[in-house]
Length: 228
Image (cartoon, rainbow, N blue to C red; front, side):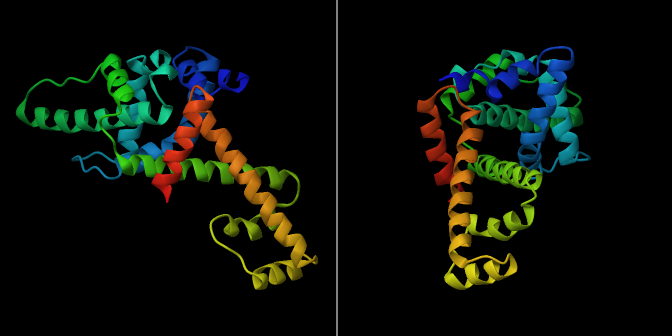
């Protein structure tokens, strides 16, 4: 269970700290989850505001409200927590846009309200979850490619990567084997090993967003279903 002591949840809490560690933690979170959050914002149409602007404002507001350092893994998965925060942020932006037109003041939800909703998970947004699942897959693929790039095997990786999401037949293996001057059976074994590495990478990434192994199995099952 030691793995769960250094998870993305730890990064979330560190991101609320001042100093170098906090900035580094926030930077790592942005690298992995900003594309997911930004994609969610692209669905919204708020006058004069782009998805990039919304994403920037979301993280600025999160820092100002001490959102990260107050987050707790026992309240649910990181996906559920951030999803709730994003959905509440969108609602607030729309509300603020309307109140500005009417000349009224704006309000935004407190961190305690976000925790309660994230825990109950009573505002499901499957589109966000699909984006999250795809983000996990993309990050796993990126990590494996970087590993093989360092080993000087990136060309073979790029040739085999398509078979992570589609079946290959004997003809495919023969063609790739000819390119890399090896045997089709060797390519078949390489594909099998790459699939195994990919599954482990995905599992590791998802493990970084939950607090224990029981949540891990549930989260993997849910993301597998939502991505299919």
